[in-house]
Amino acid sequence: MRISLVGTRGLPPNYGGYETFADHFVKNMVPLGHEVIVACERPMDRESMVEEYHGAKLVYFPTKPPKSYGLRKIYEGINDLYFYFRLAWSCDVMYILAGLGTQTLLLLRLIRPGLKIVTNNDGLEWKRSKYSWLERVLWKSFIRNSLRYSHLVVHDNPKLVEYFPKHRKSKSISIDYGVEVPPEYEWSAKSIADEFPENEQMKSLEPGNYHIVVARLQHDNNTHVILDGFLESDSDRFLLVIGGVWDSGYESHLEEIRSKPGGDRIIMPGGIYDLDLLNMLRRHAYSYIHGHSAGGTNPTLLEAMAMKRGVIAHDNPFNRHVLDGKGLFFNSEKELGIRINSFESNPDLVEDFGDSGLARVMEKYVWSDSIAKHEKVFLKLLGK
Image 1 (cartoon, rainbow, N blue to C red):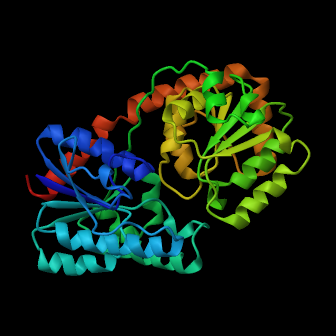
Image 2: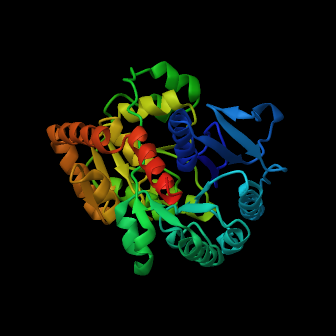
Image 3: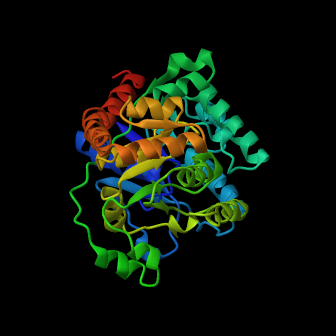
């Protein structure tokens, strides 16, 4: 079976959820005897361009992505369209990950009738507040057309099916993502000092004296609710918020919250791209606070569970499905403050949630199982 992956920025994975998925897809699908082609953006430096990755063939868009946000979105759309038609004759199954320009899939099916098109939509994109109204309208159109013209739609969380047209459920399935259980990480104050030599707040961190958030800092990830909720609590720990801010207006709002009494205990160092340092900080946090609300199974939640962290998550069907009762939930700043107080007054509860969360991901969120399920449904599409 020949499979093409379209919609990621490329491999090796350096960015986010879909790149991590592509990485494990390749590492698990190629050993099963299948040919995999991955569509990639052209990297900024030519040395990063490799022709093969763990047995998969990498193909590149002719030009590099622009730095402007608006131009990048146009670039991503053209990139997806380019690969839809370039790879259509090189594969039996085209797997599109949150693809743009899906209105063209009907044409693709007409000119390449033997091709099977599978799409994976990244949650409720049209509800994400980080997008302008025009982007939300376009996302809704892209998703509607992917539902209409795909042979199969894959969701990473069964609760997503309820948000899509009921008459499309017959060709929609849910396949869980996976997560790697990392090794133990010893605490290293030196690693923090080396990475943040002038940040005294970061250097004041110690195992268990902080709660942690790892996310893009944006409205639908409820970063503002988490900051205010932390200040509502009685905690004398720190809140470590790791991630970049997309919106300068939202960044100003977060800084206003930090200016409130107690805000000096909120540490926001930006993104951390040293995976060992990031994992060490996650592993030694008192708890993980998860604010994602726009749908699907978020990798950072699975990673926190794999780290044996007790989790306090935004209360929505997607997070409830993933945690399966193995965590606490919040809907408001006041509720989050109460949940933080509950965790801090009951460390045994935090430890129990950490242990049960790890057991859940080890049983349910296994990459080899996820890719084996993909293989099964792809072969079924091809009548094999």
